[in-house]
Image (cartoon, rainbow, N blue to C red; front, top):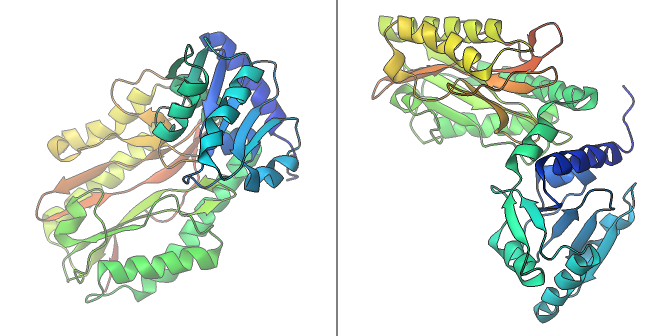
Amino acid sequence: MSQDPDPYTHRQARLSAALQRTGLEALALNPGPSLVYLTGLNFHLMERPVIAIFAPQAAPTLVMPELETAKAAALPFPAQVFPYGEDPSTWQEVFKRAMQAGSLDGRQIGVEPTRLRFLELRFLEGAAPAAHFVSAEQPLAELRMCKDEQEIAHMRRAVQIAQQALQAVLPQIKPGLTERQIAGELTLQLLKAGSEAEFPFAPIVSGGPNSANPHAAPSDRPLQTGDLLVIDWGAIYQGYISDITRTFAIGPLEDELAAIHRIVEQANAAGRAAAGPGVTAEAVDQAARQVIEAASYGPYFIHRTGHGIGMEGHEGPYIRTGSQLRLQPGMTFTIEPGIYLPGRGGVRIEDDMLITPQGAASLSDLPRGLTHLE
């Protein structure tokens, strides 16, 4: 597939339309996935502020350190750049000139509530004291939720990398290895398989009682015969992520632990089967949840069935009870039901899903049945 050298002009046009629909007169973004999506620009968050301002029918405005301006020079679209030097006492004036250039004082300006830092917000408020800064979470989510063919191709590759890495690690897993040792080897194999170094999240490797904690951090606990082992991991390729979970048995399991694995496997299948265009996120959540509730383990399924994935590990759509959002082709998200028995063990089986015009497809295809590692 050929890669579009400039998907950003089209995305900025869509953003302009979204801002006008929602009554926002501009959008101010920190470095992060939304800025990469709209411009291709990557910056590290640091002590030097960086902000991009988008207004309908106008070229983006960028405030950035002088040392970063080479990035802006290579952009495939026009942008107005306001650089500043190393003297912090001059920075506020540069922000003021940038805001004046767009006549933004007194305007309704959207921000990304989970991303905008206090640092940049203070400079923006100082530069436009009459402006109103409000959440632009909804228009940004709508902009990024439906992936195009190029984005989906990147996500497919991220899934392939993650699966290849785990398959390289599984033959090494045996009683006596610690969670931390397995996580370290998985990290190495992810890099060898082609993942970018900045993973979407650190691998979760949790055995025995620790597997009952959905977000456990790998510890120095050695694996023991009879443990459930949850491995939740992902790769990143061209800025797009994968997020997969499989649960394994270390030798023979007691009956109830084997049973909850079968139940979660059935719940995962039910959630995947329920997904499709026009289906609500709540209906998918309920399809998976009802399997677990019918088996009398409802109180031990303690999180939503899934979350959107793309350039972030958690983004829209959220597959949860109460969400009436209707799934559309191009949406990508996880299906990850689980049962967690405190002090004993837990099971989670997670797949990455894509809504297609005909239904839904799982991008991940590693076996979901219980695999015993001796």
